[in-house]
Structures are given as C-alpha cells and as structure tokens.
Image (tube, rainbow, N blue to C red; front, side, top):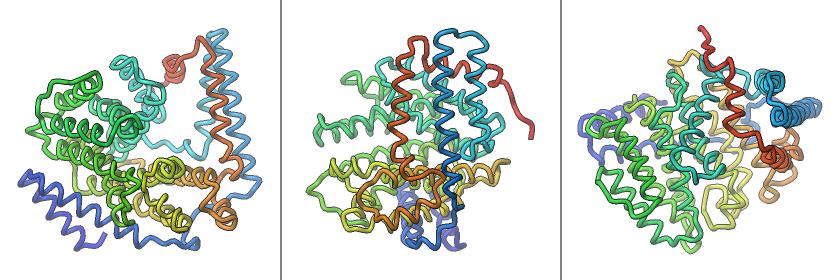
Length: 446
C-alpha cells in the first residue's frame, strides 16, 4: 500500500475514533470500497500473469482417487459405527478422517495451535447451540451459518487469537439464515422485505422493539446476545458496522430488480460493500475493536469471499435476475476476463491480510489461497456457458482435479450424504464426539 493511501486511511481511522460519528464510519467504508475497487480494476485479465502450480494428468488422477477412497471409507466407517458403535469402529472412523486430513495438500498445514481440533470443536459447539436456540433450523441453514463461523475462526487465527466459538460468533452467524432466507424468499414482496430490514435496523440502533412474530423474536434475541457481550457505549464501531451491513443487504435487494438496469460500477459498489462489511463485522464481533490494518484486511477478505460466492451462484442469480459482476460479465461475453481477474485479485487480498502477528502466517496464506482457488476452479467446471473450450483447457492445468471430476463431484457427495442420512444411529453430535475423542485437549507448543 502506498504511503499516501495509508496516510489517508489513518486520518479517517483517527477521525472515527475521535468523533464516533456515523458519517466518519461511512467515509471510512467509502474509502475502503474505492481502495479495493481500484485494485480490482488494475488486476490483470491475462493468463500469463497467473502464478499457480501446474498439475499433470497423473497427479489429478491421484488426487481424485484419494478423495474417492476417503469418501468411501468414511461411509463404510459410519455404517460400522451405526451397527456396532464399539471402540474399534469409532477408532477406525476417526483414523480414516485424520489420515486424509493430515495428508491432504488442502488441509494438512496447521494454521492454529490446536488444529484441526479447535475448528472441529467450534463447529460442534455451534451446531449444539443452534439446535438448542431454535430446533426448527434446518441442516441446510446450519451449514449456511457454519460458513460464517469458519470465516470468523479463520479471522481468529489471522489475529493470533485462540480458535473457539464465542456468543457473538454464534449470534451473528445464525442471523444469516434468518435474514438471508427472508431476502431470498420468493414469497415475500420487496416492500415486506424492506419493512423487516427497517425494523431490524431500529433494533440494531439500540431501540427496544416488541417482536411481531417468531422471526423477530429470534432475530431480536440474537442482537440482545451481542449487546450483552459488547455494551454499546464502549463498542461504537461494532454497532455502526452491524447497521451498515444491514443497509447493504437492503441495497442488494435492488440487484434482484430485473427492470433496474444497473451499470457495472453500481454492481461492483453493491457487491464490494456487502461482502466487505460482512467480514468487517465478523472481525469487530471477534475483537470488539480493530486496528486500521485489521479493518483493511477484513474488508478485503469479505470482498474476495463475496465474489467467489457470486461466481458459484451465476446460474441461480441469472434465473432470479440478480445482477452481479459475473452475471453482467456473462451477458456481455467477458466472463472469462472477469474470472482471470478474480484469480489475480485473490492474491492481492491475501497479501493485505494482517497476519504478521500469527506464528502461522505463511501457512494461513497458503491454505487460504489453495482453497479460494479450488472454489473458483469448481465453479468454472460447473458453468456450461460463458467459457470457451480453449479457456477451460488453459485453466484446467492449474486445477488439482479434472474438469469432469469437479463437475460431477456434487452429485457424488450428495449420494454419500443420502446414504449417511439413512443411518439411524448416526448424528452430527455423534460424529463430532468421535472426532474430538482424545484430541480436544491436545495443545501444541510453538
């Protein structure tokens, strides 16, 4: 980052700390948007600038066999636990899981002191707390919320903190299914969605409201849990961030208006602010207060994750009329350029993460890079339109799996999951209990 840019950010940051003013917070967010927009615009659309390892066909086949063997062994292991549930069956299942985990190029690098037990424990705690908080929450909703839990756990290790589920992490993550399901609902009108969001905004501002229904009862309680952990008088920016992400979600509703022909600049602004504010809020809820570098890094990570999500959802967004960078690019035949730009953009984002305090700096950056690129490669393999054969062939050499394997992977995974759901004596709680046996207390020494 150039000195003059950092100096301008520092001025905005100091003004915010001094004034505790909503306008000062908005100015900082606007500056973050402009900063990352300029990085995005300058990112190369040229294949020649991609700096990834190249995978030969034999390596791809080896990777695919490892994953297939792992999935088959996991299913066999769970069937054995379902039928016998003795020590040998449980131990064999656990060994299968960790043997793959510890030898996988995608997960094996430790990014925290008690890795991966701390991430598994956080996941387990979240599922249990969610089921207790609202038994009506579906498995799909829990998984949707878990993506944010994992993002917040990742931020914890980036900030050199212990990995664990806290009440603010739980509250903010489980808010996602409630608010996103409302925004995505085809049964609720735009006006109804806006009214709901406006009432949530009133609550986020600290106003005490009487819940109108079950939805508001749960949502307002989650806000209250955050207030109990972070008193408003001491954590002004945290609540400004919560209000800002709610506003950005309302703005994003405009993306679904098919009659609203937005420009690429407008789409970028909505997407960048929505994604950036989401993870910035994650960061505030982890620490309460943030340094300038933490603000800049979290906002950028949020943009990257938002764009990866948008690429994954191109087909669905196209059907529903949701305008994103990638639906827009697909319409004007520039999807390939936008995808290469995203791959180059990811590297810029990771370079700006404030990992210098973490003893796992290099490994965090490596794991994050690999998994972001994997998500993009999987998205490319599943899009039948927008990419030429030449483009797909060029991109394929950088992927650890073949395009055909990635395209069919979800069907394979769903088939295994359907088989697991038929096992009457298997639950998420039991699986996590097995994985955490003898491991949750292990703490490494640096």
